[in-house]
Length: 125
Image (cartoon, rainbow, N blue to C red; front, side, top):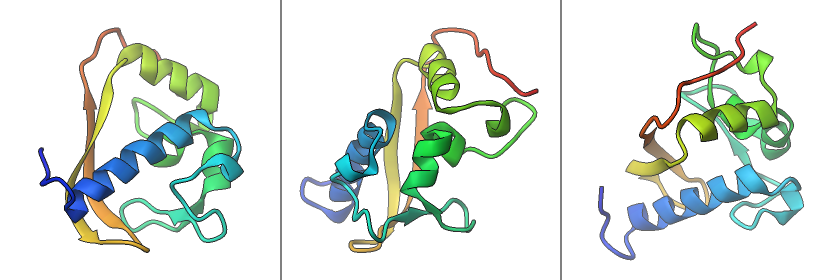
């Protein structure tokens, strides 16, 4: 989906892509520039707010996924979750599909996809 340059959806998509890089590679919340460390929380599908520290402790994939018969965050840590997903889908793009509210509280709908380059190998037990 191509957003008009400078539009709110374009800004949010750039913010989300930069946030994802920080959340995946910066191990100290103090180093994240895309959020306000004092007030930042995120939630999924109406669930309870979670902190950035929680995400760093469990891993980004684990914080963003719920348990299923295919993958259980309870049996994967930051390192194993990243290894499994990055091996399976080396390119795993974000796309903002709709923006419900803009800064300072950003609420949006998104999708995440990639081409499977390798078999999925995960830990569920």
